[in-house]
Amino acid sequence: MKNIIKFGVPIILLLGIYISGIYLFDSPSGVVVGLYNSDKKEFDSSNTLAIMYENDNGEYVESTSSNWLGDGYTFNAALSKCKNGSKIYYDSATNKVMVEANTNDRCYVYFDAYSPNFVEYLLENVYVSDGVNGLYYHDGVGTYTNANQEAGDNSYRYSGANPNNYVCFGSDAAICPDEYLYRIVGLFDDDKDGVYNVKLIKADYTTSAMLGTNSRDYYGSYEYDTSYYRGSLDTSTIATYRWNYDTSAREGSSNNWTTSELNKINLNTNYLNYLGNSWVSMIEDAIWYLGKIASYSNTAKNFYTGERNNVGNGSNSTIYGPENANGNSTKIGLMYSSDYGYAAYPDAWTTNLYNYNSTTIVQNNWLYMGLYEWTITPSSRFSTDVFHLVFNGNLTISSADYYYSVRPVFYLKSNISYVSGDGTKDSPFRVGV
Image (tube, rainbow, N blue to C red; front, top):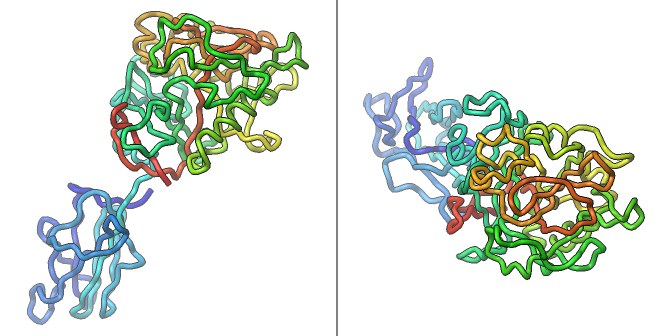
């Protein structure tokens, strides 16, 4: 993470003369002063230190203020120099700049405008402690109710009724169109390398114009009960898809995600084309965990464990990613059953997901949208079975040739920048490269 100069942090300029050591002189209250003149025993105001900062146009200009810069700048060691050979040092541990001078000199300290990546922004400005702003750190050692039910994967997940986790993705319009609104599931470090990716899910359901009709898994318009629907679409435009209508498999149905045309054509071809290359370039090639669990009568933690085990049906892969996708994209997937379970307020985490249709639970689960909807999680009960959500909020099992709505899910690359926004629906987070 870059060294960030933040307002209120005690950043003190240390200036001195080198005689038989370094004599340090603190500038009072962070105010910039001139270099120390050993003959006059005072600071020489004619040889002041210049603070150069990067403006909005990417140009360096000299600060006209006698005070240090506020938030949003990083020290540039390569450019920071003195005319007569004095040396400038930066202590990242204490956020202090020191000039080692053996003569009167004029020194230039450069600061670059700091644009945090999205992960840094969320961890520095949104996550405070478990539950604040709806984020929970799943390290397995929380002190709140049901913290022992955390995933234990060091992820940060949004939970509760309606956290401010909206992202505008796919549009630069001043007011984000509803079709480009997504929500943050959480921040994940699945490969445990210390680098997190932000995981997004489409805020509302998809239409055939987004996912296309050119696969065996496309069925048609949504036909089930819509009285619980929470979104803003005309429900007649919401498309339904089979999870995997594989005519070569038993009963024309298979819970093998690697042969699903919903996966390969509708999500990872048509939807990528719908988003466009500039936006697709921000999406990570992901690994999807397809471990299986038999019953819907399990908690979020049990589902999380089952999704990442090595239990499958026959030869079905339990890990699907770039290395075994046979040339197919793995950028887009669906939510895990455990994602849905953990999106509820922690009071629900000891409840089996089959019983998530409780009024209290659905009112405090931001992922609940009120329609039949697929998850990516297969069931080990039969080779045809997959978990899905019911319109009333519970989770159950159907054959993969049934037809339900879908919401695309993907991970942003770790270096994607935060641009603006506070995460509300009216001011969603904006991201860029």
